[in-house]
Image (cartoon, rainbow, N blue to C red; front, side):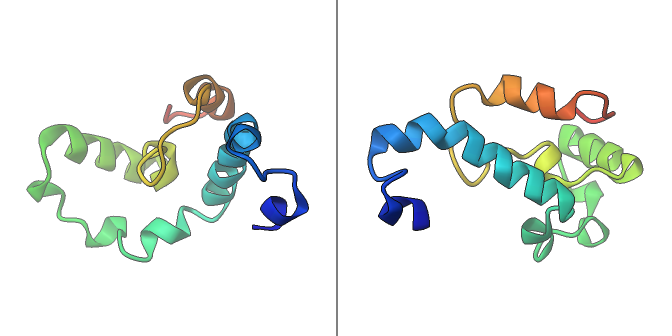
Length: 99
């Protein structure tokens, strides 16, 4: 809201220009906080992996073993991914096991 009222993101065009950077900021914060916002409801220990489809079960098990967090795989769940998101994700995940 600050940027809207300050005029730095007060039009759709300005928002779209900044959208990838805004998303990267959120992704970084969620990684640093172990996806706290997701884990308020979705904790690995509370998941019944046997009730999930095979692909989801395998990926959640891999994430659990590797110390992954929700945002590692679930970017774009709450908001449509901005242009350039896939390249930005590869850049941010360079050198980590989960990509």
